Length: 227
Ligand SMILES: Nc1ncnc2c1ncn2[C@@H]1O[C@H](COP(=O)(O)OP(=O)(O)O)[C@@H](O)[C@H]1O
Ligand SMILES: [Mg+2]
Image (cartoon, rainbow, N blue to C red; front, side, top):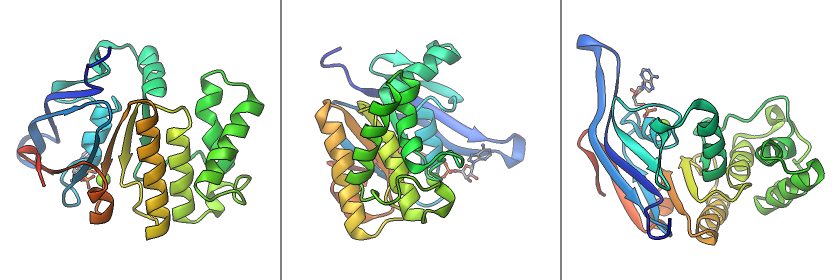
């Protein structure tokens, strides 16, 4: 709906383990992301940044609180509609990339389009275009295992934006990239978010990347606070 925030997280709590060994990451975290917003989340390793992104993408369930994307509560969706909605609305860049090892770079990027019913030739053409955009023309037919870490990261970014999702959630998307590639990838992520009046939320340790987002928030046990 117009005017409605793209992402709403209300009073999220998440921790792991039981009893004395329990680790409480955050207990009342709230966040609202409107159309056109770009937000960077920073914080020390292990503070829960990846865990938070997984909750926001509906890949994990909070212990308390709820997450709505474009007004839809992840908890209200059965597994299949949930997967469909995620595929349509959310582009996710995993910290560990999670490319499918038996598919080429081009096939990895084309896959979300194929799953959405786009014809193979059109899907591959769009995948090649995006791979060119991130500087990977020559690597289109390579399997992930022969790519460098930075090349794999750029394939994962191309895959996340290929369906032009309105919400982009990116876990250290430039962590394996040099400054020039990082700037280029950030242009692509910001451009994709802008194109559909979408929003970008990324986790980063790079102050230069954070500075290009309008808002920088630090994750702590108290939730998200201005950095
Ligand atoms: N599934 C899990 N089970 C138990 N502990 C977990 C799980 N996922 C993450 N953790 C722990 O939660 C903490 C935060 O992890 P993570 O969200 O990956 O942090 P960050 O991304 O900020 O480095 C870490 O101590 C990690 O070991
Ligand atoms: Mg992490």
